[in-house]
Image (tube, rainbow, N blue to C red; front, side, top):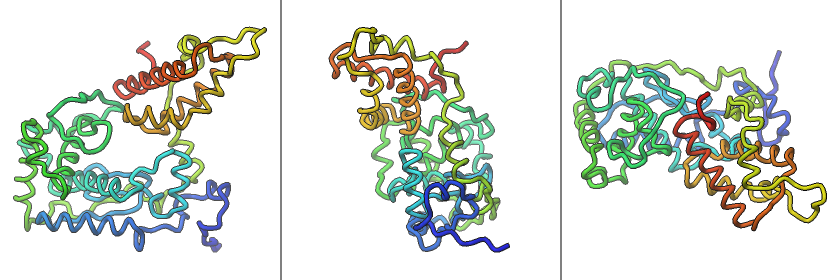
Length: 341
């Protein structure tokens, strides 16, 4: 049976969401992604590094464990898919050239680590930690720590030794960063100097692992886009039900039977939803779609509880923003919105 080629420019969203990822007519060649990869390779060459990781379309940004390759999300390969990602997730990770380059450098840090098995070196382990340390679902970070470089959001270098190395490598590789000056007096400078020494030692050396397996390759993914986004948007495993009720009642007020004039709380949240997402994301560093998921819950609960605005609207918004921000910070630090049972 011949499968009709999909035209992403004409397809309806309903049909697009029913399309399997493997059937999408996308590739890296002749796209802006290819230009970013060429720039990455140029940066590596300018640093005297012969190793150039193979890049391929995957379900997300990744470098598979111990595989010297780099996966780039398939949705970056076509404007229609980027728009769908924006619609579904409120952000397109790596959707600008600067952002894409930052992520490429980070994933290349992983790839070169695996290609030369740098993580087996004694000094690597002394500076970054044990490579085999378990990856946890969440991590506690120290915002003001000078032991780690700051490259990607959420202080990602503090997540795991492998991420610490990848972030340090990314800072070292970035042409416009004067890391010796920017990190002067930081403990992280020692890590940067070590990376500089390592890369100097790798000049003209062939990698120990030359080829890597392309896990989660887009061309092999049988999931439909609809299922892909349903899974991706599933941000919380917790059962909220009445979790927010007490705090919502403190911010708003339960409507009395005789009251008609006070504005409804859920309409206030809906009205300012985009601004709330923007502000909370800016100051907490949390991803926009996660904040949006929380706001949707608050809207539903406020409506179910029949809440109204009891105080000045501006003060109510301040209280609401503070509440949402505190929840996001708790989630970022602990991975939960509620305390341990």
